[in-house]
Amino acid sequence: MAAHEQVADFDRLAALWAWLSSWIAADGGVGGPIVHRGDLKRLVAVHDTPWTQEAVIQGLLELYRRSGADYWLNAALRLGDAQCARQRSDSSFRWAGHEDDRFSSLVHNALADCALLDLAAVLRDRSDAERRRRYLSTAERNLDEYVIGVLYRPALQGFAMNVPDHYAGRDRFIVNMNSIAIEALVKLDQQRGHDRHAPLIRRVGQRILSLQSQKGAAKGGLPYSDLEPETHVPLYTALALRGLRSLSDVDRDLNCARLAGDAVAFLGRLEDRDTGLWYHKLEGEKLHRFPIFVAGAGIICNGLFEAALLTGTELDTDALARRLLRFQYRHGPIRNFIGYDHPDNGRPRGRRQDCWEDVYPTPNWNAQAFRFLCRVLPPPERPVRDDRSFGGGRSRRYIYMETRQVSMVAAAFPLRSAVLAVFLKRWRYALVVPGPYAVVGAVAKVLMRVSWSRAALRRLRRLR
Image 1 (cartoon, one colour):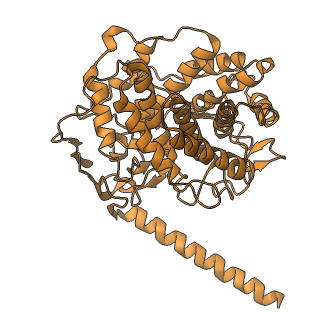
Image 2 (cartoon, helix red, strand yellow; image 1 turned 135 degrees about the vertical axis):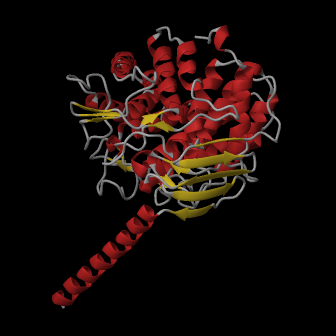
Image 3 (cartoon, one colour; image 1 turned 120 degrees about the vertical axis):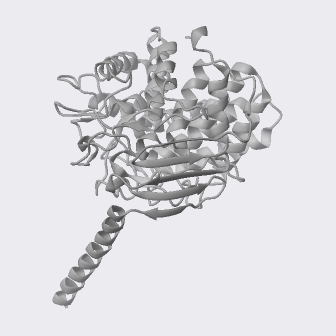
């Protein structure tokens, strides 16, 4: 499944790596702000997260395997050391909540474990036994004591997202997160040379297969969770495909190849013909086109890649790479979204004009594109570029400027996007001046908490 030669562009992948590496802090974490769908953001604290770390590590390992150059492995090990240092006393990983630091969620812990276990596998043939032991013990401790010990729910036949689930208010079986947990558990058993977790892996795998949609527009898709069976997000269906190949290694009777083929067909039906990317989600029979993930579509490309390996089908990696590269900036990164300011994204007055959330590239999504491109483009001959590289863009709605040391965005319109943010890339905190909409929302939350507190006190007084 090698990419065609006409896609080969050494400078493109080198430029993306140079941009990503500009966000690496002194302790080895790939930092950067988080801009997620539905106006979920983390802008002030710009520390690393396993979502980004794992994808960059996997991309670097791909380059190492394909090129044999120690530069890529050393870069991956630096990030792996940083991820090990994030483990807390309860065995969970710090900063494992993506846009919300209240979480140490299932998917981020499992992704961190996948990265550490793949690094350990590479180190098996190298004289670095101590580091390999550290990676293995860190991942094993996290999986046994936190993922299984804290997040496993027999009633779900799988793992909960977090303790507690701040978004749903109750435990959910989130399909893509449980799939990544399967991948991590299979890799741990393979590294340890046993099948201790096989019964649990089969149980969770059977639960995933039971949730696949069998009819209607969503046929073949994997729903977001057991509580949201009508919600199908292509990005998360593709992420769920990752664990199926590992599951197939444990139990071939589950027919994971058929499930993967049906999921690929579902993704094909949700392609956006204008952009070459994918619609945002299908809710029942209603299609929500926006916001379209751009750099984040690397997750879908990776899912299709994994499905092709599982089913033995051909994949046009050339075409997939072009879908991402057409949105790449000259200074390396790929834009985040298309249509962020749209009613589909919870903005009733949105008109789909570009806002800063669309054009501003963040490492959390670019890391996903990076991993895929590392699988299909030739490894760069030049690992770094000129430190004086500069990029950005502007319109009447925003100004975006960036160097290797500093990234800045200022926006006045639409009001929901209004912000002034300055990021010193090697620091863990940014200077952020929120717009009026964000200020009003924060005040409303405080007032709501105060009113709830007062009501609770009144009820306690009545009980007395």
